[in-house]
Amino acid sequence: MIPELRKNFNAAFSENRYQALLSTLESRCRARVEFRVAETPIFLTRALLESIAAEGAALAQSLLSDLEYLAAAQQAIPAGYTVARLTAHPHFLTADFALVKDANGLLAPKLVEIQAFPSVFAYQAELCGVYRQVFGLPTALGTYLGGLNEDTYWAMLRRTVLGSHAPENVVLAEIDPFNQKTLPDFLVTQKRLGIAIVDIASLVPVGNKLHYRNASGRLIPVHRIYNRAIADELMARRVQLPFDLTHEWDVEWAGHPNWYFLISKFSIPWLCRSRANLRVVPPAAFLSDFLDGRGFRDLAAAGVPLPGSISPDAVYNDLLLKPLFSFAGKGIQFAPSQTELEAIPLGQRRDYLVQQRMRFEPTIVTPYGLTQAEIRILYMWPDGDRLTPAIVLVRLGRGKMMGVDHNRDQLWVGGSAAFYPEHQP
Image: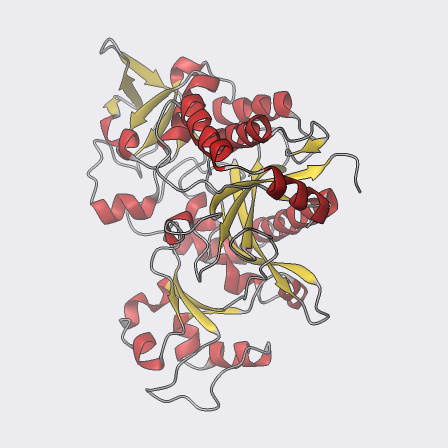
């Protein structure tokens, strides 16, 4: 944290400026922002952000080089959701980190989760620009990572999404996109990249090609799909697609659907097998392994406080129960009991993990007290290029959960951004 920047921002803050932030943001996005936007960005050193970004990239690369892990993750993809023509690498990656106190009382990053799926790349860049404009932030404050600036950021996003194709033949595909909370991001993406926003259930198969209908109703062939449709939502809504996902269609994916499963919470117990990773990865085990005793012993050996004996009324105060394939914190349970864990059917236990709970360290000074920050690094990986950290998405909160939906009734919390002094180490 940079105390001087925090002090200056808080002193200059006004409710009128915050309302201007919201109205300007919605004007730029051409849509109402349905999730809570925090009153403030956060100010960190460049060195801290770059070190967190490097940790996330190293974890991702370790998974991509682990053939045994990738084979196991492939088996975890639900039947009917294995998509053909898997890309050599994910095009998008997010890594979420908490700031916690280490054994020496110093702030240290800990992985919350890692996911090979697109985030709100377009919206987040707009949010940073609006914070800068409305609050008059110094031009010497940077917000992009990986050596990028505003121009090269948008150029990289364009290359990652479009590949070598014309915008007319690339679509952003989502389930019922115009009724999603992420619509502001879709609209900014559409404006910046010139691509159509389509409901994935409206794609039209003709021969071995997929098509969408343009504004005049003409069928346009789709050469590449910027996939924003989340598999667990497809399953939960029982969406019936007009084409078979498992068929080998003549189409490229920017954000291939399989990577949603291949790099996900499924990876965390595997990452824990390397003791070197435990510096940034909290101990975790698949629920099935935990209940058969192996995972229990592994977590105890890693220093997680657990009850001395297993009994039906045992409560694991230092554990979280997480479904592997869910989004936005859905289904997470704090301090599960042995009875609650055993109530999950035997055949479903591989779809959950138990993980040591992290205590986010409150570090952001606000008029409503110290506030916690979750730091999400957003990475892009264009075809023929390298995995690059690009920008930071921040969630501020004061409750158990950091998602914006879990802090909607508080002030100085919600979705935010990070800035750093350009010339500070």
